[in-house]
Length: 413
View (cartoon, rainbow, N blue to C red):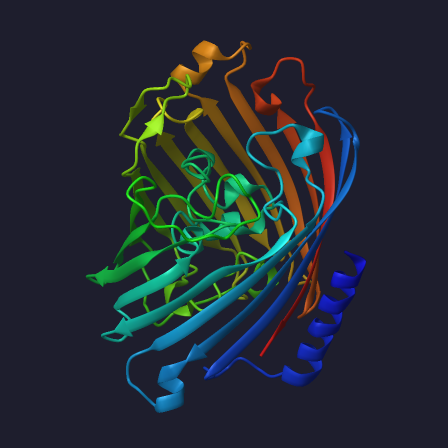
């Protein structure tokens, strides 16, 4: 493990020395390496007090063929290698929602590889390959500051499927279509293999298309409500582009007010929560979310609010619904390009699970305080505090309190 980390650090330093350039112009080749280290201490409560160290390495490459051949429409190839190491905070806290968004089994894998063709000045896009659904679906930009997994994708959505939906750390093969309808509405549709990897081997990134596994069908409508919205006004706050940054998808990123309305459906049969041998169809869910930016001054400082509510069919899923929200303030200390945020996420047991649950508790709630501080353009520190109420809705577990420090190194070409 130490040897692997050393090699990765050497690779990152080579990238910094070799490819230090500005990103003002679109390049034919884009390379990026991101190292995220996360020391985690559970001070009390949960399963046990203690310390773990997690890390995550993302190495991506994108070829823009339109720049190579001077084509009008954008055609690109994207490759994403992912490595995870270290312990798991869940083994200390006993939570269901997963407190760390880089927590995963120790392995290296090819996480994404896809081709994307855009048409009509990027108003229509088609993508095919191994694809991270959560890179574009169910994303509220202010929520990406936070470390808890439920602020990246809703807890009721993340729990779905035989091996989860096509999200970190295992993706599915599929196709995604996206289009602007009118001036302010974007529609996305994805059809993906219903079982990412192999549920019996969590280190596997196996692709196995079958009628038994079925498909995951996901759709989302994003309505941009900002008065000054324009497709030409794209902004990415460099101060907290975490490892969930949308590399290779710059045409889809807007720092604007919006409302998301989405839904998902698995075509395969599933066992019910009661573990009945009888199989049935109908594993589906829906969600609505919104983000709102309020400018504070002429320097583009802002307070951003976000909120989300989602439901899932409680016949097949433990959580019947989830609610989350919070706010982010940019540059709370004016001399830094920093960000501060407070957020909460509550997962509510569905009625079917609650009938067999040996606890009177029905809700797990996490409250997170976080602060990101970019020391340089390539290094960021992010102290984080999370307090969990009713971990996994188990009465015998005390509420855990944890402290963490995200250390992120990122280099781009």
